[in-house]
Amino acid sequence: MTTNKIEDSVGQNFWEQLWQKNETGWDIGQASPAITQYMGQYTNKNKAILIPGCGNAHEAEFLVATGFTNITLIDIAPKAVETLKEKFSDIPQVKILCEDFFEHVGNYDLIIEQTFFSAIPPTRREEYAKKMYSILNPKGKIIGVLFNWRL
Ligand SMILES: C[S@@+](CC[C@H](N)C(=O)[O-])C[C@H]1O[C@@H](n2cnc3c(N)ncnc32)[C@H](O)[C@@H]1O
Image (cartoon, rainbow, N blue to C red):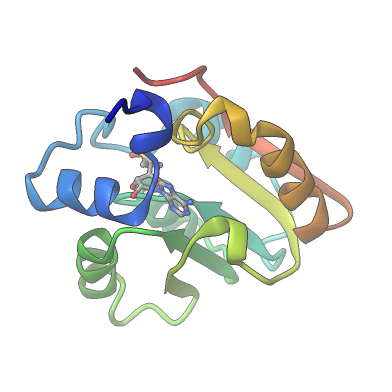
C-alpha cells in the first residue's frame, strides 16, 4: 500500500506519538520573542485569546505574567494537554482543551499562532483560513509566527 507522507502525519495519533516520545524539536523553550513584543504593546488585557496547537504554551505563561485574563489553549495531543493542565492548574485565566482545532467552537478577539500553521498539511490551508475566520470576532486578528510545511 502506498502512503502519503504528508497526509499520514496529521492526526491525533501522529502528534500523540511525538509527545509520548518527547520528540518536540519545534519547542524553543520560551515564549516566541515576536509574540512577546507584539503582546507587550497590547493594552486590553481582557480580550479573548486563543492559542491553537499550543504545545507547551510558553506564550500563555507570558500572557498570564503580563496580566491577560482570558486565554484558551487547544492541543490535539492528550500528553501535551496533561502537562498543560498541571502547569496551569491554579491559573483560572487559562482554559485548556484537548481538541482538534478544526472542530473547535468559540469566538476570539485574538488568535496567536506559534508554528501551528506548519503542523497543518498544505491541503488543509483553505479550511484553516475559513476556520480561523469563523472563530474570530469582528475586527479580530491572527498574529504570530507562521512557517511553511515542517517536513
Ligand atoms: C509544531 S507543534 C507547535 C507547538 C507550539 N505551538 C510550539 O511552538 O512550541 C504543533 C502542535 O499542534 C498540535 N496539533 C496538531 N494538529 C492539531 C489540530 N488539528 N488541532 C489542535 N492541535 C493540533 C500538536 O500536537 C503540536 O503540539
